Length: 312
Ligand SMILES: Nc1ncnc2c1ncn2[C@@H]1O[C@H](COP(=O)(O)OP(=O)(O)OP(=O)(O)O)[C@@H](O)[C@H]1O
Ligand SMILES: [Mg+2]
Image 1: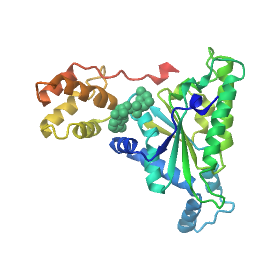
Image 2 (image 1 turned 90 degrees about the vertical axis):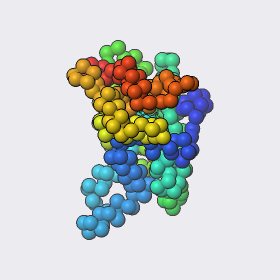
Image 3 (image 1 turned 90 degrees about the horizontal axis):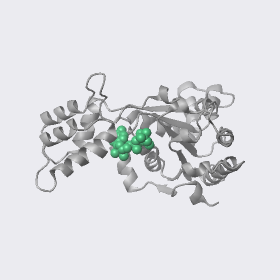
Image 4 (image 1 turned 180 degrees about the vertical axis):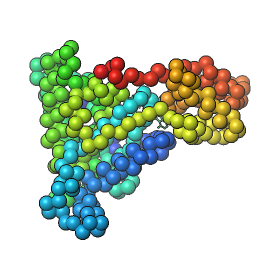
């Protein structure tokens, strides 16, 4: 079985399309900054030692807090509502790391078909192969004298399909074995100092195996945009179309929550449905106008909220 059966096309970052996508993501500045810190410490663990020295006059030997930090598994969970930027951030933040740290970032994206066909031992085998492949790439990320040469990012999107809770009664024996193999792989990474980050995305955090959740160094939550964030997305998208600030405010209200029954638009409702639909409504004979966008918005139902509790 070759790499192409386990992963989507392997991508080297930075790359212009993903860089631009990263910069366009609204409302995720805290996540972006945390990702930078995680990567900076992973890239050069001596930086955190220098910090402890500078601020606390501590040296590393026997320093419990720093050992706890360094011993974590390099596993980050992106969890939350649909169309809120989980996949977009997971597949693009490597561009920022690459630019910050001056090295290439190699992006692996696990294919869901990696679950195999349910033959005995197959899933364990596939996951083992995937982790081996990623480990050998990550090992090339550091020179013999410890210098950073590159960072590897493994993205497991729609992770609930792969590592749903082993408590799920309908779960196939082979799938349980797969979760065990996954946990083993993650544990093997912990404390190795390899320049590797594993990101799992899900909108069903409650359905993930608790042992996987427990290992996560951080859980990043993703939500629907608030008024200011919808305003930002809409004004970015509609720049140059002559939409007045007052009309923009109306659009922000029209795409917001309407009472308890109708949630606000998701980020993707705005970028992948509202704006393109409005443009096609105007095309070919009309100009785009605020009224036209408002009409399109009032005809459009926002994506229903994902009920994590009910899904688990
Ligand atoms: N925070 C954001 N800022 C700007 N645009 C966003 C943001 N989040 C999502 N989008 C837009 O929505 C599109 C879909 O987002 P993405 O695929 O990352 O959603 P997701 O959280 O992975 O959803 P799902 O749970 O359905 O997989 C993006 O390509 C982008 O156009
Ligand atoms: Mg996604």
